[in-house]
Image (cartoon, rainbow, N blue to C red; front, side, top):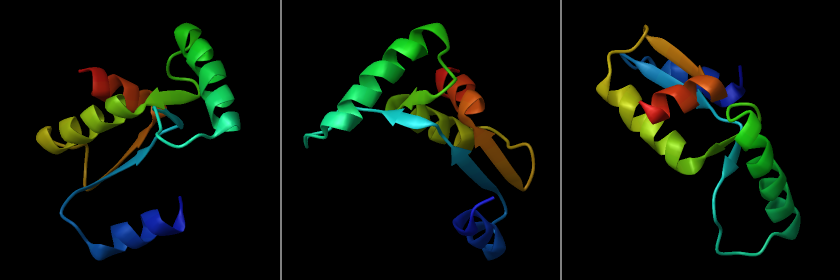
Length: 90
């Protein structure tokens, strides 16, 4: 667990969902050549193993909305990359 996650949980919300996505796949306005190369490589890897190392930002956004609309699995729910993919496509 990260320090920020611990601080958020300490606030004492009735319910808290923590998302831990892998590398976010998105299009950026600014030019970052090495990031572009990495995203291209991970985009190819995602065709064979979609939940392994990356996730599209749109999938993360859908998972966030879905987690708010669905009853959670407890007071604190942690969603790793594979669960984000599953919830984001539901």
